[in-house]
Length: 399
Image (cartoon, rainbow, N blue to C red; front, side, top):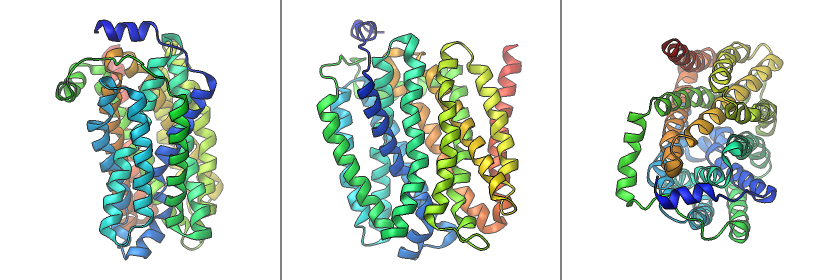
């Protein structure tokens, strides 16, 4: 670690509650721009004449943009002023969202979706900044709180988007999102800390080259990246495809009603917020194992659709609890590995998250088109069981 990075860690100021709340809200609003299309897929497909089996491409392209941002933008947080980086991304995100809202054809829509995903990685710069401003004994708790904002954004986005699309159409969803990001950018400009020392003096090219080496050399990073890929593939499998059976007969639910399942899932995700504290206490392995068992079991309940919406909702709560618990634990562990490289670590880690989400999105809609809801559940359960198997093999290896 450089002397500058060491001083930054040792003198890290505490986050105020107001700043922590604003970070969480900004993270939630930013990540919502990635997941807002999921309950809108049928109306977007109808608007542009996209085939039902290919409409998952809308989500996949956003995730591709997000993955590119993780590789190219997030690592900048180690070598430039994070406050300025956050402001630029937030304000440009408002512009990109406005472009999607006004898209005249499918080409502008797809291009805009990629840029929206590219800029949404401001979430990870904020999470890394939260970790940098926290004392070591509080890091897991602070990361858990900010990440809770991310999960609220993911799940609440579906409900809010559902309400807006029912009232005024899918384009309004993106116009409202653009306004929110502009407002948050103005607020952040007032409260973000100034003159926070950068963690590294390396060149940008050196920072990018170091990312794969960090993961290749550290088995903990590789393991946690594998968990991220698989659990978010499972997560995206559910949330991308569920609008298709719920909006069709016999349920014929509105987008607002479908969004209520996001509120149900929110309860489970928030309950997992304590995972960061348990990780701080050295219980990361146990938390991960229990969470992956619950994730696998959740698909049994999710498979009750269309026989029981109540059991299905219980499965949604279980799945969101498990995914959030694993995610918070993952981040708490990776931030402790290399304090001077937190931005590039979280960027590299989230590439696996984004890749898993993209895979889940495209395979879920394709599975539904060919095999119905049973096919979706089979794919989601396979991702979950693969993550559990990975945890079991690692546990056996370490005993």
